[in-house]
Length: 270
Image 1: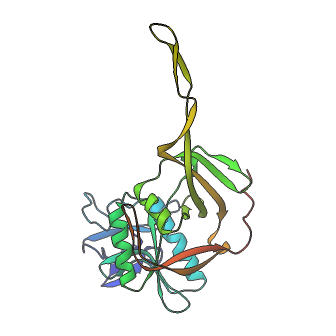
Image 2 (image 1 turned 45 degrees about the vertical axis):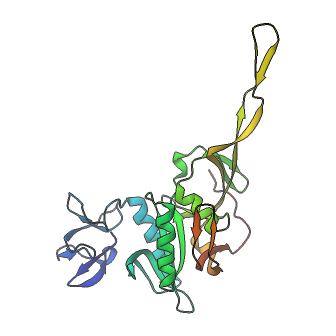
Image 3 (image 1 turned 30 degrees about the horizontal axis):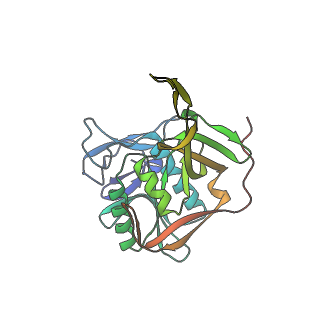
């Protein structure tokens, strides 16, 4: 966690000093301040960890939250992390130019399509504009470089990514915490080749099968355009009407969109 309570007041780990007693805003238990040259400054529960605020927290998730927090505060904007809105806790919270709340959720843990729709609807009910950004680690994926980014021929999207594709009208934005960069993503069908085969049958003659392509049920082709820094993107909102497509429900509200300020940047140098 990047935030804890010091005498009841919210305190950022980056500004905290070792010595005082810090409490978890979620469960109220005492947490330990972790600061070092190679780790993101954060607060940690003592094991075993039972607090829902801390379960599943990773270094990548904290890095993504800090990336957005630092950028938004430098604009400058009113911004916070792990901030309560209604009954939920926003990964990153900020106020837009018109004073409307923005919520940035860095999704790194499994979540069902029903849960992400419900949570999005709850944020909308609080008047907040919302975006969800999956985390990605390109070093762990087989990619093919292109003039404008990367292509992953066989990518197995998580259920919430499929939901996001519809929510964002076929566009997703990924955060790569290890580099602090964003990638614009788009799914297409991944085609599987069914090899042609031929065999002889009793009584003479032959039969054959295959020799065609079919779309995969599991895989998608993921095209990543970029990379972009947050400074290369305008952050704005657009109204989304409620709709249902198949089993997916999309609530009505303002979704956050990222718009590149200039043409697609050149791929990073080796």
